[in-house]
Image (cartoon, rainbow, N blue to C red):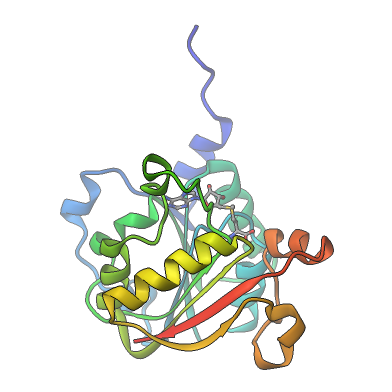
Length: 217
Ligand SMILES: C[S@@+](CC[C@H](N)C(=O)[O-])C[C@H]1O[C@@H](n2cnc3c(N)ncnc32)[C@H](O)[C@@H]1O
């Protein structure tokens, strides 16, 4: 039996703050994001956004920056876009695509800061690990797309994923580590944490230690 269509698919496709990228779209993709936003403000990216809490509040608080969010799920995209509009936020666009497509979405040195919060860690076995976001190609692509001196912030509750990722970054030897903590909630005074994502909220409530790293290009 055919599965009913996701009711959020059509809402996403018709939403003027969400772009749903199909494969062949990338062949036509040519603008620079500052031209798209009609200003020269810094560009902040959040990958694996999930729901809206962190990003819609960040974008409503920082009207002098442009925000781009990448997420896959229709319902999360739609609800997040609507929540941001409720906050009178205009300085954002949401992209429905795989985060691994950043090589096709950005020009060299377009990004100021990228946030990656609590991406699914997947399992340790090779066949599972290949789904992890942080792979050599992605790390190099993001480096190329980031402006010099600018940042990537990664948080996860999953220590094995965190340690494996840090080792991989060290092997690739491009990004510099500025800040690293395996329990950042207890060292909060060093960090910028005005808003939390939905996952961080749950982990903090359950007293789970959160790993945090800030890389710099
Ligand atoms: C574990 S949730 C974390 C959400 C959020 N960052 C937070 O901290 O609450 C991961 C989210 O990433 C999205 N996602 C998974 N794989 C993705 C991919 N390859 N590209 C973009 N988003 C992805 C999922 O749809 C899901 O909403």
